[in-house]
Amino acid sequence: MSGPVQVTDGERNIIIDRLTNALMTIDYAHHEIHSGGAFRCGTQKEATANGNLTLSFKTANTTKQAHMVWAVETENSSTVSVYEKSEVTGGSAVTPRNANRSFADSSVTMQSVVKDATVVTTNATVIGNKVIGSNDLRSRDPNLGGAAASRGEWVLKQNTWYTVKITDTSNAAQNLWIGMDWYEHTPKLS
Image (tube, rainbow, N blue to C red):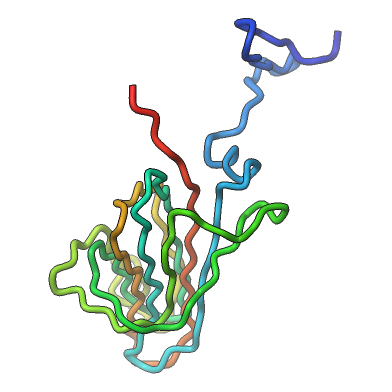
C-alpha cells in the first residue's frame, strides 16, 4: 500500500505517512488561516534622519484573544521597541486583511490599527527591544540595516493599546517597514 496510515479514536483521525512515518499535520496558527481567523497588516515609509515609524493597535474587549507576531525591516541602523499600554492619538488608519482571501477583512480582536500616531510611552510596558545596525554587537556600520521579528507569538490583553516603533539611529533618511500577523482564538477554560 502506498497511501497514508490513519489512526482514529472514532471521532478524530491522525494521518501518518507510510514512507517517512511523519505525522501529517498543520500547526494551530496555520489552521486559523484556513478557517478565516487569521489577519495581517503592515506599513512602510521613507523616514527622515532620526525619524521613526509606528504601527499602533488597540485590542477589542472581547472573549476572543489576538495571538500576534511582528516583524520589521530597515535600510540603515535603527532601534525597535514594542510597547504595551501606550497612549495613542491620531494617526492614519491601516486596514487588516484576512489571510484567507475567501473571508471578510473583519478582525474581531483589533478595534483599531493606525500608523504614525502620536504615541506617549511614559507609562507603557516595554515588551520587546531590538537594535539593528551600528549599535548592534555584530556591526558598527550605520548604513547596515536589517530585519527583526518576535520569535514567538504574544497573546495580547483585551482593550489595550500596543505600539511597534522603529527609530532611525543612522542620521540618514531610510525606508522602514513594520508588519504584524495574528490569529483570533477564544480560550477553552477547563
